[in-house]
Structures are given as structure tokens and as C-alpha cells.
Image 1: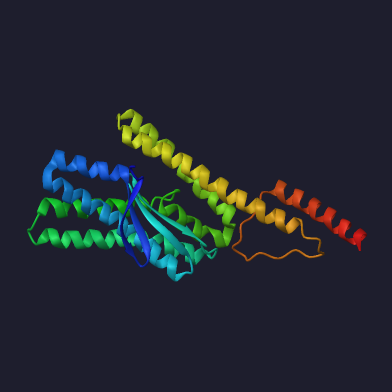
Image 2 (image 1 turned 180 degrees about the vertical axis):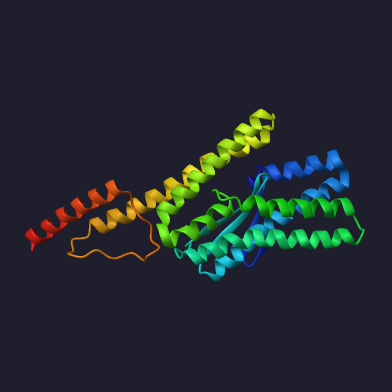
Length: 258
């Protein structure tokens, strides 16, 4: 039976897995480009793994749990839980990935200057530089979207900051998609569609989380409401109005029961 992914190694206790499609891609590179192609693909996805490990290292130090890192043909994904709600912690976790990529770009450029395997190291330096810059775009699911949200959350609240970052991301996706269609860059079109959908998904996830929190608060039969921290998520006006009515209903019910 063919597995969907294969365990490569464990780093800091985190399983690093490779998806089956990436294995197929490496085999294709070996046939198509011989040893140099395999070295390039290996260096590329090692760079992506280190990018995700940069996120994971900071996340662990901030009290998060990292379940695994999955390497895919489109990049890497670090599966985490218990993410911190403090904007500064989110900022540090998000920025760690691009900083790791920039450090790798510098390392590969230094190796390029040695004159050994110059094409390989020059390519890896360039791809890490582009990986770092691309991830700084202020849109989800890139790191830049989370950095942007973390910077805006203390002033706007998490929900409003997420909405603004998602809106900017969708505008960028539309512009990129039009550019890709005009110049027949179909990969750019696919990336634009992915970013557009991911931006909306991130906002919906934060919005549903806000709804569940407000529902829990509204259902408490007390005369006071727990005050969220100043950076907490803010609900839309219509939801606050509904919450206040629901809260009043439960308060009256509790008083009558007493």
C-alpha cells in the first residue's frame, strides 16, 4: 500500500514528512536533469523545511505545540496548535520564517563565491531570497499577512485587522491574476486564485472563532461580562447588538430562576 507521506527525520521532536507527490517530483528531476537536478530539488525543499522550522522554533518558545512539518510540491506546512493570542508573539512566529530564508540566501551566496557548484548555489541563493520576499507579501496565507495583522491588531482588534489583511490580499490576487492572464503566466494565475481563496478562508475562520467566543459570553447568566484584552477580536456591530439582547435574556431568566 502506497503511503501519502514519508517520515524524513525529526528535528526538535517535530516529525518532518515528505508528501508522496514530492517523492515523485524528485524521481522526475533525477531522470530529467540527472544529479544536478536532484541536488537542486533537495536543496530547495531543505530550504523550505528550514523556513518552517524557523516558525516552529519560535512557536515552541512561545508555548505552542508543533505536531509536524509536511513538505509539499507547493511548499511546506507546519501544523501547530495552541497559538498565542498576543500580537507580538504572532509577529515573532510569522517573521521567523522569512528571516530564516534570508539567512539561507546569504549562506548559499557565500558558497557561490567559493566557486564550487556555482550554478547550484546561485540558484538556491536566489530561490531563498524570493521565498523570503514572497512570504512578506501582506496577504494570507503568507507570513506577511500574519505580520500585517499582528501590527494592526492592537489598534483595530484581531477581526478587523484580519479583514483588512484579507481585503488587501484579495486585491493583490486580482491584480496578479489579471497580470497572469494578460501575459499567459498560468502558474501566476493559479497562485492568485489560491491567495484569493486563502484570504477569505482566514477571515471566515477568525470570524467563526469570534462568534463562538461571543456566544459563550452571551450564554453566561451573570450581571457582568468578562472584558477581553485590548488586542482581542472585535465582532461586527450587528453581532454585538444580537449578543446584548441574548445576554439580557439570559440575565432575566437567571434572576427569575433565583
